Image (spheres, each protein chain N blue to C red):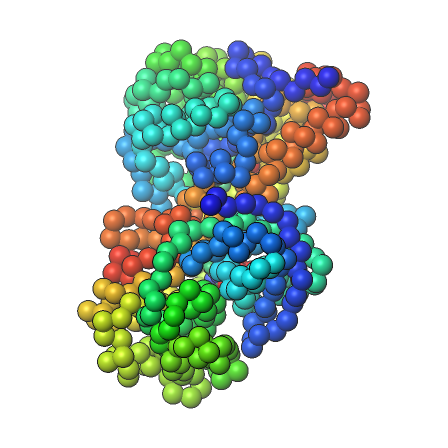
Length: 297
Length: 245
Ligand SMILES: Cc1cc2nc3c(=O)[nH]c(=O)nc-3n(C[C@H](O)[C@H](O)[C@H](O)COP(=O)(O)OP(=O)(O)OC[C@H]3O[C@@H](n4cnc5c(N)ncnc54)[C@H](O)[C@@H]3O)c2cc1C
Ligand SMILES: Cc1cc2nc3c(=O)[nH]c(=O)nc-3n(C[C@H](O)[C@H](O)[C@H](O)COP(=O)(O)O)c2cc1C
Ligand code: FES
């Protein structure tokens, strides 16, 4: 019997495959069987609804996508009253992803959210003018935000990091010191696409965040560095589309993984990764994920 | 009926005017497809191109459906070259379908004929105003006439644009429901030309899409009541709702 379950500082998941924040919404339940997933992280919510950036907001890049959505969302109360009860119909761990423009907004958000498996703190969005990765680059600010969130809630707190910081290990350490239960690494990489017909950026906002297979080796390197330096579990994110990608993340030290843009390319990727991971472990004689984790070291 | 995600084989690839007509084997589409639906069409076992392409349903038959592809960039070029027997990833049907009137006016610019041709199959009769750049690009005019549509065409190499055609025939449009599909500039110009008739007009919109399923929020269009997602609330919108600023 293969045991795919994981325990992230007390957060128990039936398997390590989590749907990443911002790439899915409720209609996806018709295509992906959420009951089979380790967990799902809802898109970033803010205190008040945000309308997002002007379009175009997303386009394809080589082996990936670039987006500048700008956290379009209906606000935290809509999440609590409308979205969460619906998500609860599924038998999977539900996480909320929160976004604030100040430390106070992060505290307020975390005081409102109840009844989820954990809160993922988004200090890594590249597509906003305030907060986002501007916070996430600075270990001191990340420490303060994490601390105030942990003070407001008894729920496990996961801090999602940006690869744009000068020293991501330092930022991860700051989150851990402030009481985070786990680190998500990484959010999208800042990038640019230019429309040669106009000579101007194709995305209306200009820069955006790149995700998908194109960023996998870069993201994996970040995960590896963090996992060998901090004690709390790391949830790997960046370019995972197959079980082989997932295995690389476990070997590099991830305890769980997030599937993001892959679902655009193949909505069944998360389920196929779970099935194929199990088959591979069976073939290779592994019994649980602990035996894989951090083998690189 | 909820959409499904399936890998399905191409069973026919031929030219239709300047476009590629792809027929895909599928016994189920006929049961679920309705007027206004579109699909996300992806490249089997490929991460480059990474994203599927949004394409309208063109025809739906008992054991197959078809799409009409205009080559614009890399993805549509690859699609136009798929061979019989090759698989495509199909997510759909997507969008919010609608019940078209028994009769009405269709205004097509170029490849905009694709969803309007599908729509005409759900109607009893009507009028089609249809403009392209060149004469060879005018397709399906006979088939539209067989569907009891009065067809008026124009080409840029001979006469002008579909906007000119509409301007010249405004009397034919009065009191009718109007459905438009074509480039953004054409839609914007038509809004002006239609004047008060624009209140009865609906438009198929195109936006860059990541998921087609309301997940990524990339396909936003500005409307009088804020941003709306083309893949969820569209692709058809009332023309008077759409903001062009
Ligand atoms: C609801 C809907 C229905 C459509 N129906 C049809 C149809 O029936 N027949 C047809 O030929 N075309 C249709 N289109 C347009 C078609 O999706 C684009 O022509 C196609 O995506 C271009 O891809 P490419 O790889 O050739 O271009 P590239 O420029 O290489 O594509 C790069 C990225 O930009 C996106 N993109 C580029 N141009 C467009 C565009 N005009 N609209 C939307 N996304 C774009 C692509 O999907 C891709 O993600 C439809 C679009 C939408 C939104
Ligand atoms: C369209 C889009 C929207 C996203 N929105 C969010 C978000 O709201 N909050 C967040 O923390 N990350 C967001 N992300 C980042 C993803 O959750 C993920 O971390 C990133 O895309 C890298 O993983 P991937 O390569 O598997 O997509 C978004 C990514 C995309 C492509
Ligand atoms: S294409 Fe993803 S939300 Fe519309």
